[in-house]
Amino acid sequence: MLTKNIEAPIAFTTTDSSPLGRALEKTAMALRTGSPLRPDEDFIRYALDNSAIVAVTDVRGTIIYVNSKFCEISGYTEAELVGSNHRMLKSGEHDTAFFRAMYREIAQGRIWHGEICNRRKDGSLYWVDTTIVPHVSARGKSDSYTSIRFDITSRKQLEVELRASKDHLKRIANLDHLTGLPNRRYFQEYVETLVNRLISVGGHFHLALLDVDTFKEINDSFGHAAGDQLLQTIAARLAACCPNAFISRLGGDEFGIVLPDATPAAANALFESVLESIRQPIQVGVTARRCSSSLGVAVFPNDRQDAESLLKAADLALYQAKALGRDRFELFQPKLGEIADRRAAMLLEIEDGLRLDAFELHYQPIVPVAGNGAISLEALMRWRHPQRGLLTPGAFQEGFSDPAVRAALGMFMLERVFKDAAGFAAQAIPLQCIAINLTNSDFRSETFIDRFFELLGQTGIAPDRFCVEVTEGMFLGSNQKRVEHGLRRLHTAGVEIALDDFGTGYASLTDLRNLPINRLKIDRSFVANVVCSHEDQAITRGIIDLAHSLGKLVTAEGVETAEQMRLLSTMGCDHLQGWYFSKACPPQDLKAVIKRLARVDRS
Image (tube, rainbow, N blue to C red; front, side):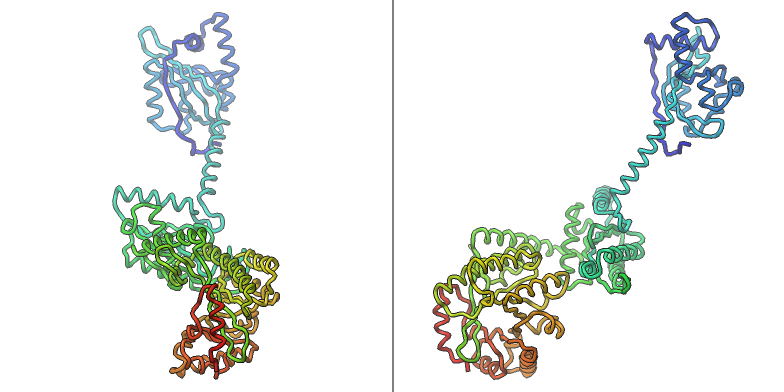
């Protein structure tokens, strides 16, 4: 049986003066009166009777003739139909206005054509494409109607199925299959529609973007099934926290929330409740894990007046929330846009600098405390900016926030340090090793490490002539396993591994025991006050003793005075580095610096 989700029938009227139209009228009159037909008219009647569903009614709707096909499709016998009113077939699919318009046409002697749904004797519905031809008397009034119908039930059923399929496809296209929430496409359409409507009628809403802070670690550690379970749990918690909000999964671990008509205080309270909800333990596999999230919020129309800009504003606020330590929400501020513009400009300038070979390496000596051992170097990046002059990394720190730019700078440093090292060897400058600073981006793939070994082969420089410096923070987060794998490859080949800025991060004793680390570098913040601060002395001495007990060497950074040098030497530090010995210098000045350092008293 057809459902009631079928569109309203299409009806139109016409006055047909064609030969076929005149023949139909004559045939209709013959059907009504039972008068004989000419051979050609008799053939038309025969053709109609065998192909069409035909009935004749008087002006009140009383059936006065039906053919066999009418009986066949309706389920009624001819005896049951003739003498009954045509309303006995009424399906309820059409309203009063539909029939009123139809009768208005045929009462005026005009042929009506449309699609009608009727009800069979067994209660099922069928659709017929219908042409009603009125017979107009000599007085100009319609006195009977002949209806010629064709069964279109199958076509209408197909339309219903196609419409249902289209609705299903639309749902699939608009929903996230994992969480059942609207997806990014639907979210963007919703925001655009809401913005356009509120521009006309007024109003406001909060738009929030949410990232799960620890999703990648859980996904990497427990597998994708656990990650999916985590996302489904968070989706359910968001729906429970925000019953009046439009919630979407935008992709990965990012969700979108649209909160309409909320006061600032109510919105802030809701976003705090969202953060607190996600902080609660979540079952991941067989264990319960605690997670956190970061939220960036923008308000329409206060912050931006179009959907695209509003989403960008919320994204900037989300970036700020992450930069401030995560597990918090941040509202968009105009200064965030300025920071983003400045950062984008900086990234473009760095790309230009790399293309124009404006970057170079300077080298700062690392001096052994005991004996006359060879000096090592740390390679430090410099940017010869066309307007701002020679810049240290601190002046373009924003560029390091972009992983792709970090990776490009890291690859530049790798290529250049090998080139310079070959030059030092050609000048017979006596060196122990050259240290280069790595970032997480250097371990995004095997490209950096593979290129390192390629350059070893091309230059013939031994791997033990290099040291790579990493920071404690690189062993946290999603890239931890990649970093460890890369360092073990280097360490196995003979490259020294140094843990930089030790004491300022989160390294544990377990890390020192398990990771392939040869050297600790004491951060300059402890060295700066080591002469006058008992606390810094205790920390520095403790680091040196700990490192030595684990069989590791120690370098102190930031040595600027003779007092610092003597105290650190007394504590047993192995190497010293700082302006007391030399600032970082370009490669062409290095030979003179090394010669001068040979005369420096390190006792």
